[in-house]
Length: 392
Image 1 (tube, helix red, strand yellow):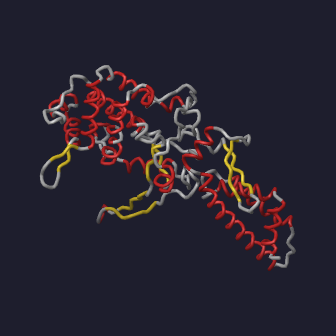
Image 2 (cartoon, rainbow, N blue to C red):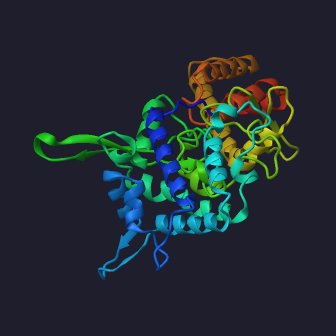
Image 3 (tube, one colour):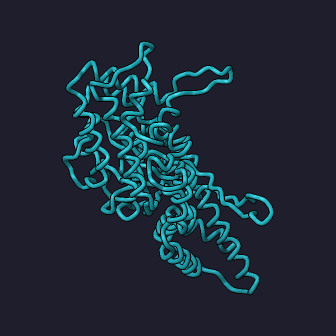
């Protein structure tokens, strides 16, 4: 992830969700769990393993009530049934699944550990992996989307995906850009809710939650607060999609990534602007020492930053040049004689302003400061800007 971001204040709540997920996994992997003659979950077994309101709520989530008043299995039940069958076909797997789950959800404590590996990928056989790939994402797509009830997490209010998005931007209120690409943050719209004395303004944030580690490739992390980040729609729905931030068969998966919340790229990378023989400006991301690295390659591969910033850089340079042209006209109207040093002074002032601003406050601020640094030091660029600045 590019920018520094703060964790939403839901750690304790998510620990209770993890405990519920583990309880569901234990139920599915228990060799005494049986299915009905029709191959569905047995209600009494749910009520036996999940007591009180939790059992009632979970049983309701296993079924979909159709318009014709019939019932069909929900995706949650289908995933559970698939895991139950896979576990019964391999009766030694139950403890392995639970251990793998417990291990993988602790990944954030191991981001500097070069020997860390995700057990889902290394310890589970293919049938179990496929079953978990169907089951675990449902905790996000259905349960978190609709809301986890008090019976799961203990709070009086249902906890939904939109609550996590709202809390993310509350604790990152000073961030004005997408954490992954430096473009404008998701839109916020205030709308009236309620009537009469109960009328109030509610802020809706039009931002998606992105799974840094994709939920289909890392099912245990489908509902993990360190794996969920609110990004702009372009990052989430167009560019990143299901890209794995870890290269296939990487022997140091976490060391070679910029993990959200824990290891932002912004303090470790350098973004330099160059100009090729055709006069096209190009952004280049490197480590601070100017070299490439696996984590730089992964950052670029996942978010396509250099490719996307190529076009954004054209826009940034255009706005800077327009600003210089305007400043030049203003000074000429006052009768001043403009020279190269005047131009460099203005560029230096702009550079200092961008560099001194908190990171993440100015849209495309990374590209603006990088271009200004390039322009100040490049004689050919200065000569071209001087023509616009002086109007000659």
